[in-house]
Length: 329
Ligand SMILES: NC(=O)c1ccc[n+]([C@@H]2O[C@H](COP(=O)([O-])OP(=O)(O)OC[C@H]3O[C@@H](n4cnc5c(N)ncnc54)[C@H](OP(=O)(O)O)[C@@H]3O)[C@@H](O)[C@H]2O)c1
Image (tube, rainbow, N blue to C red; front, side):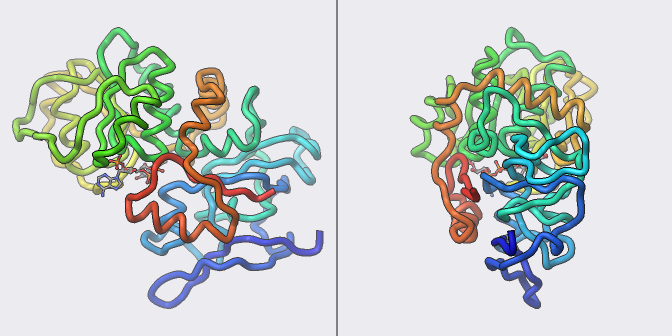
């Protein structure tokens, strides 16, 4: 190919400018595997990157997009052959390495994950980092001892990408899931994903004692801040919290009481640098749990490269539900 399109983020003085550029392969960050992109998806981090609301891209100019799926175009890594269907999430894609909002991507072979049967390239990106992170939360908590008979799971930021997939995955894995949302009109959607109970974030009385009534055997926290502090106080004895996100804040004001009196485990989830063996096992687990209709239910819209910035704005205004796919092929 002579040239191709990419959504490239440029330094614009006080902020950033994300615009469609025409690039050639030799302009891309280095790697052994060139992927002809088929799909990507918009994650919270991508929305921060292309709107400039967060410093995600360390050294502009850089192509945005932390996820991509597609077919191998060329490979100097013997594990991959032209035509192989693959995906990449994290590892610095769209942060320090030219990312997935591009018709071609070039990455190190160690970053490349073979597409997991029965997912197709579109479904893999409907899942993307958001779904992978939800599945990693399930895998990490179960590795520590969580099981469905221990009690309900609380998922906050419930209508978001991570939250939506967390509800679906834990529900498919046999857990009872309570969804905590700030959207008052989301109950039908959340129930369709498998939530058994819905909590309205606006009506929550967080209490202020170091230990409140123990309610949750496990939780997936996309919010941080007060939301995470409340989870530490309301997790059942020997329960687990997967700390995933910071949509509400980065601080955590709590006490040691949940940890030393109730044996609560706070498990950090870092999907970008997830080691390869756990990464492959987690994709296998989620591909086994999710049904095609589960994935369709979470996808709210599809855009082209020219629609990413507007969709990212909607996400920043908290008007987004589920996942936005980006069609590249
Ligand atoms: N650790 C990791 O590896 C990893 C991986 C992926 C994502 N993350 C992080 O996880 C979080 C969720 O990511 P995502 O892609 O699911 O984002 P998303 O689709 O934008 O979902 C975030 C959800 O959180 C709620 N929310 C947003 N802003 C809020 C605020 N100011 N206060 C309270 N609730 C708010 C909303 O849900 P409701 O309206 O339903 O309440 C929103 O839908 C982000 O912080 C992201 O950076 C971390």
